[in-house]
Length: 465
Image (cartoon, rainbow, N blue to C red; front, top):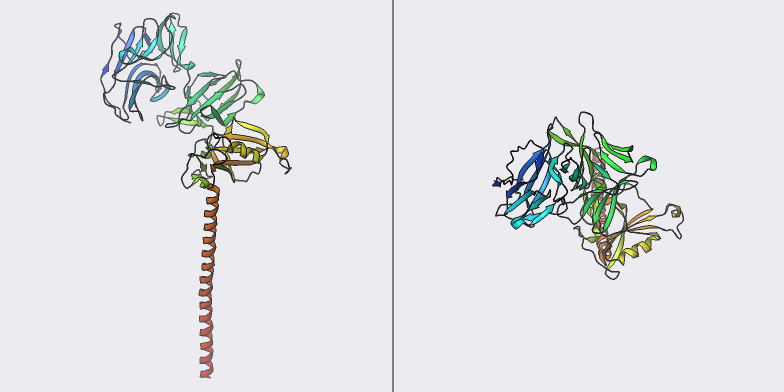
């Protein structure tokens, strides 16, 4: 990524002598970043404002102007960094697009704002007239607005993004969110009353792909990232922990919901390498990740991807709609790592297939037969999970007769596949027959040669005698 030099204009309503080493800013502060007139891919411009007083990697706060791919625009944001890693951003959920300039204003009323040209406000803390006097960056990485009594009126920890730093707490009913690039899907780590769960989100639909249920069956009040793992509390009592491989020499610094894979990881800082390294990850096999392959792709045991051949040689997510234009095909020895929150209970496999085929929003279904009904072939029933996406599909080592993954394809796709398979089978038979015939001729020729040679030798002996 290229970092371009740019004009940095700083204006202040009050004459304040400050250095980057200080961790506080008073009201009346304003800083302006000039935005390039021409779009340049990869452009990043930052003005670092304050930092924490601690050994590297330390926390710092900055305003940023960045080029956004696709729209050829520039976004303006207030960010918190741990070393070079961005751990919080005002633009996590919604970008503020600007041209000409990006302004951070901490006005006399105690409101912190990001503004663009003509004073247009793109983000604000909403703390006007609450007695706010200072913007502070704590050693924990929490960016806070405080009053004269140093009571917190606003804090970045109350607006979690995709990273949770050491000492940060997430209460029950809150979550981390992560957005894969160039996708309408997003990941979330959600703190529920009885478990911690990872989801792949598609519009209003959610698909679970990992969960952790604490021991003891107690409700979760909050979780906190400690030096050795994610601690789980009921009230003030810690009763469980997702422990990492971190040590006292290399304690954890942050937890991240990766925006590419959706994996949950915990990181420590290595003094030896000068980099953050993973001490824990929730999912250790590629095929357990929700987006390991493209739509209609199957993750193989090797970790590579293959397309569902029923929809062609190229993975294709354009599906047919309606029973008259589509049909359901059961794939052998595959399952989905996703658990849909949309399902129908106590139904048969054929009924499950019909439900998905008649629903235009359904791309695939997974049928899980009830364990009690598995021994009874007649009248078996189970749970039918419906999916709006054909993702998270993987092969399994052993055939599971209780689980069936059924995908929707255009009508006739199965027939053409069957014809193609029949043609290939006929070709194989012909090739085998021809090969056998050729081998038979060769062996016959070799046998005839040795028979002729032996007969000739016998005749020569008789003539000699």
